[in-house]
Length: 143
Image (cartoon, rainbow, N blue to C red):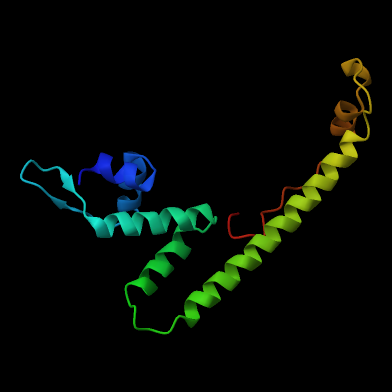
């Protein structure tokens, strides 16, 4: 199948496919006599796997590890469990960060109960007067 057909089968763009090839997540396809990429069923399965991992917010390195495990199907899946457990911790960290952000936003929102002139807006005044904190890097794997 051609790249457009693969893109349709995996619900993504041709650019995404080329990107995953460049990143080494998707193996390069064979080329036809016309030099067009020719994909097969294994590309569809692998691309769907990658896309599902990305939907779960996994990094390319995590996906690369999972693909390496897939390529050795007779090995024990303990490392897969460990990788997923670690990813769950990253999700928990991100949830905590988002909860702190939500609390800050709710506090700002309480400073302006009703629409009024911008010069009297508690949100604008709060943003202008709150101390500027150093933006710390995220503790999740997403940075």
